[in-house]
Image (cartoon, rainbow, N blue to C red; front, side, top):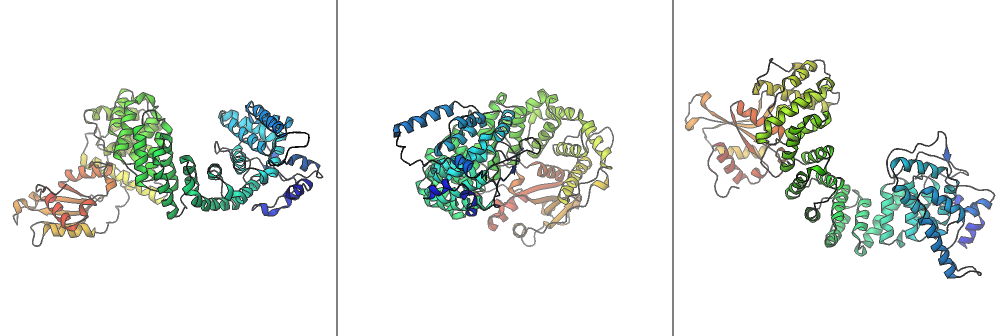
Length: 635
C-alpha cells in the first residue's frame, strides 16, 4: 500500500515534512553550487550564477513518477520474465557500469539503462570511486560536468524515492557517495537519506555501521546528523560484542569522538585489546590516529600499537609515520624505544626523504621534547655539506630544533653553527623583525653570536612595535631579554659593542610563590642552627627566578668572608624542562644554568620525582647542596 501511494502520488514524498529537520522544501528548490567536497576544502569553481536542482519537481505527476522509477527488490518477476532473466540483466548492467571511467560515463549509462533500486546505489558509488582516482584538476572538471549533467538530477531523485526500499548497506553507500560527490548536505536528497538511515538504524550490521560512520565523520552538524550520531552511539554500545573487524571498530570509535562517555570509551578499549592479535601495521597506525581523534589515552593499547609499528618500521611511508609522531604528541604519549627506532630508521634511510619531510620529522620530535640523536647528527652533516640549499623557513626551523633540544653536536658544533650563520646572512635583507629576533634568540641559546645578524636585529629593534596580543608580546619581550643577558653575561667577542634598547625589554615577571614542598624539604635538609643561609624566591638580573639560594661558608666556619662563600641556586624543574628520557636540560633551562655559573652560582636541579617523599627529598637535597656522595638507595 505504501509503495502504491508513492507511485500514484508523486508529490507525496515532497509533502512529508517529518522526513526532514531542515527548512521546508519548496517546489523547484534550488541550491547554490557551493559544495564541500571530501577531497579538499576548496569549493568547486562553478559558472557564475549557475544553480542546480537536487529535488522537488512536480510536472503534473508524469515526470515525478518517471523519475522515481521505484522497483522493489523483493518483488516477483513480471509474468513475461523469469528470475534468471532479472539476474542476467543485473549482471549485464554491472559489466557496463565497470566499464565507466568517470562520473559522466555513469550518468550516460543511466540514460540508456534506468537503474533499479540497488543499481542506484551502485551508480553513485562508482561515480565516487572513479572520481577519487583522478587528479585534483581533472576531478574538479569532472564534478562540474556531473552537476551540469541532466541525468544527475534524475539519479538523485531515484535515490531519494527508493531510499526506503534499499538494503541498509546500499543505503549507507548511497549517502556516503552523495556526500562525497559534493551534494549539499542540507539538500532534500541528503536529508531524506539521513532520515531513512535513522528509521533503519536498528537493522544495520557491522559493515553498514562502518560505512555510515565514515560518512557522518565528514558531515557538518545538523539536526538529522546529530540525531543519527546519537542513535549510532546507542547501537554501537549494544552491538560492540559482535563487532569482528578492526577497521569497523576504529571507524565507529572515530565517529563517537571526544564526546563519548568514559564508560563507553573503556568498553571500546577492552574490545580493541581483545582484538590486538588481529592488528596489521595499518591497523596499529590507524588506532593511534583514532585515539588522538577521540582524545582517549590508553597506555596498554598504545604500547601494543607501538610494538607493532617498531616491528614493521621499514617501508612505512612519510605520511603515516609523521602522523604517528603528531598523534603521540597530541596524546602526550612518549615512548623512548619507539621514538629512537623511528629516528634510527629515518637516519639510516636519509635519501628516502625530502628536505621538507626531514624538517617536519625534526619539528615533530622537538614538539614531543625528544632529541632524535641519530637523525640530528646526520642532518647536521647535511647542513654543513650544503647550507645554501636551505630556505629561510628551513633555517628558522633548524635553529629552533637544535637550540630548544640543546643537542650536543660535539666536533660538528662549530662547522654547523658557522654554516647556519652564513646561510642566514644571505637572507638578512629580506628578513622581518620577528624572523631576525627568532634566529638571534635561538643562536644565543646555543652560545653563538653572529655579528651581522645581531647588528641587523638591534638596528631595527628600536623601530619595532611589539605584538598587540599580551601573550605574544610577553614572548617577544622574553626573547629580547635573553639576547640582552647573553650579550652582557657571555660577553662574546664582537667587532662593535652591542646592547639591546631598554624600550624592548619590558618588565620582569612577578616573583612566583614559594614552592611549599621544596621549602619544607630544604629546611629539613639544612636543619636547625645550620651554618648555611637560606633565601627563597630570588630574582637575578631582573629575569631569572631562583626557587632558593643556599649560601654556605667555606669549611662550615662562621665569619668567613662573604666573597669566599659557596652559593647554590636550587631550581625546581618540571619534567618538560628536560629532553624526554634524559637529564639533559632543554634550551631555556640550559642557558639559565650557563648564566648562573657565570654569576658564581652552583645550580642544583630538583624534579617532581625528587619531592615525592619528604624524608627522602631532604636527604637528596642535602647530598646535592653539600656535594656528599649518594647512598646506594639513591637512583
